[in-house]
Length: 538
Ligand code: ATP
Ligand code: MN
Image (tube, rainbow, N blue to C red; front, side, top):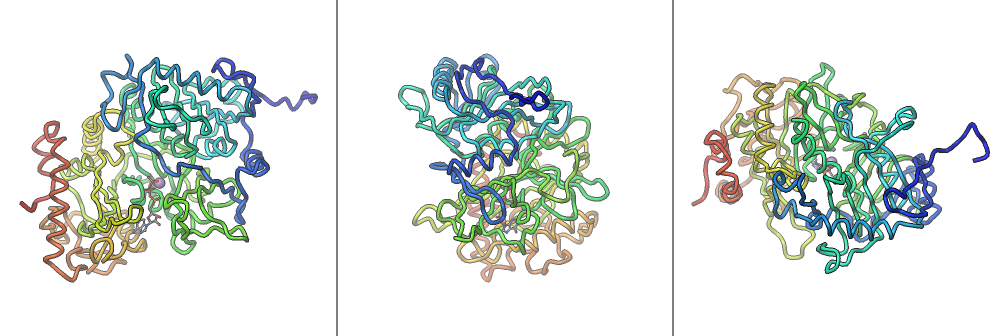
């Protein structure tokens, strides 16, 4: 170093089995940005943001996500298609191959943590092959202070080697890419994929095991924000249903956009230190806060830039899942630290491409439990040729791919907390209106925001059931009017021009609900089963 006053701390990776690596420890995001650009691994967009291509994978690969089955996990995990077991010795063998691969390379190492609440803090060391993946870790995890870094003892390690390709037959993987959680060694081992979402969702999955099992705390795949009176709102929903979009509200302080814990001390805390927003069709008019967060420090993924360096947000030639990550302070109105009180309102977001679920409705406690376990949204045509009809998609707890325990465990915790906190639960259809996908249109963001604001401002006549209509198929309470929303939009049937087609489609969906719920029936009380739709096609 030469200059004593500016000793740059570094760390050795030998104890991880990584030999003779050139370690870049705790670089600033500016340094990582510059290194990425100088190595030709990314370019700077006109906004100042870094733009990278994540390579072969532009989304997570749930079929290549494994959990090591050993004494810590074998009796607790809900093994199956979602939580696929991996042999401990196979893990060790593959780990050794990965660290050999990383040896003698230039690597990027960062110490950071998850969980904004001191009592739940999980210290993490991230070891990346690529500089931009390490900048992603800076954006998405919480950033320790200088003092905290003095003697930082990371509990979990993420080893991220996108350039390492597994050999399925030798390594026990399905194909060349993998994301494996080892709860005994406290390692997330990721290889063969550069998709950054694997890094953040790896730690999310780990916390979804650690918090309920060891800390009696409820982890949630939801966004959260808080109003001027300190009232917290949380938004559950599967990918693309609007968690990030709707929690980013200039009039409410953002707690976080994706992963939270609900403690027994009546608080909600963010796991992360940043946001990861979809940018498909993003416009400054519709989503100014997210648009303006795309500046130096942000990382755009898999977008197309024109010759001036501007992003064409409509261009999906690489993927529909174009993204940007940024540290949470790129948003103006944020809660510091990222902690709120017990939620007053919970929104279940669904992008119903059948266009039959009301745009907003109030749920009873049994309906809330039923819909939480069902976790419904729909997938639309687009990727696969010939797919014209929407396909219902159910994902328990609105996040099954990240939930290592049986869904009933999370559902019990949520029901219990909802009842104790006296929270209101709303089902919000951010999907189609006026007909199904292909006939109708996506619900206007302006209307969805108006409906949510009406709930949060207490404008929906919560205590007067004359203000509601019980939906004949779904049994949910649909408000008759809502400030800022045309009355006709509130009733999905009246937005269709064809009653018969509406009911036929609605029954198609309720049948899918019933079929999906069968596997949970044995675990559910009569009370919860009653929360399902009221009418089906036989
Ligand atoms: P993920 O879990 O993958 O992060 P998410 O739930 O955070 O997903 P968003 O990133 O908020 O989802 O994506 C919602 C997308 O749908 C955005 O591109 C948004 O612009 C678009 N959209 C269109 N209409 C609406 C609406 N009425 N409400 C919410 N989002 C809408
Ligand atoms: Mn999101």
